[in-house]
Image (cartoon, rainbow, N blue to C red; front, side, top):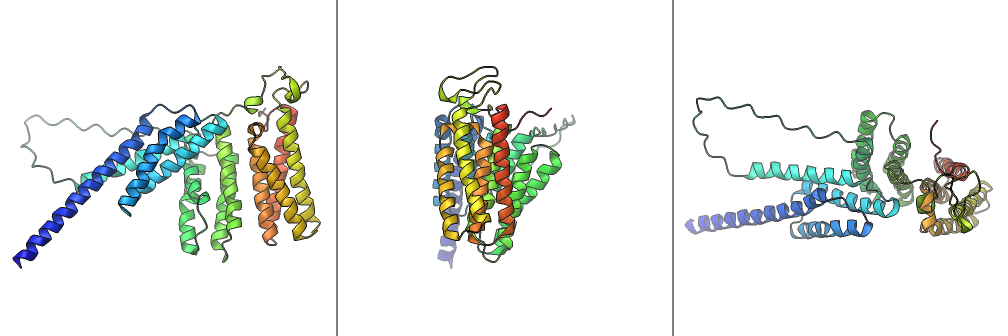
Length: 381
């Protein structure tokens, strides 16, 4: 009996030591992420990826060594890592860090949760000293966190939708709806806190939420329909990057009143138009329009698939070129249109058909605006 008690005490002490090691490594992991928050924001994509590489690798090592440990903290740091990575992509593509504040917010939340956890697991404090004659000064209230701007709050909201866009539809309906719920609630909170702000982004995320909900409630939960909803999330990401200050016209744009020599020169009276981008975008729009016509005429699934492949290849080639940076909204809507045409091809779906036509019409409108004014969205009067 005495030997059993000694063994039990030894096992308990080992578990305490192991827990202390885990908490120390968690603190070191948080320190790496907090260095990102405290560092000067990167100015290039390469610098950005270098800044986040070590913390993300450390997080994977921690998860492998302590599976299932500190789930809430690990989840926030995973979300921060994904958001920082998308921020690096935004910096590469659009020259800004629109999503960076959302990532820092998740790191701060993880740090606060860890601090509360260490308070709970710390040994009980020593008995307080007898009260002095002089009354203690009142404790200053904790400073209220600064209010996020609409783009910063939208970045935090997008991180919730990225969780959906980066996942496959869960097989179980309840799991699917539980995955969707934080994004839906976040969208409603954003609309309430920032009424009327970033309306196109809100509309794109509302379409995404609706699409995800339809997939969750259907019996098949098709991956293609899920991907169609995810296209709205990627479109919202581009809208946010544009709202955060992307220069109109991209790197090939010219200042108002100027001209650019060679094949990309703008015609008189239309400053800022990248002619190469305009012509290539028109060709892709024409391919998507042919796909729409083939489907309207019901010429057969095989011919529709051929048109879909051609349009997809044309869009991918254009989207990977520097010229596409001048037309982010046009590209985003063409991607969305193709996603819905693909869904329409798999099954007779009137919602997908109407959504595809709507996205194609928006792409044509943005392209026409760009041709006439040098901007996809002309300035409001």
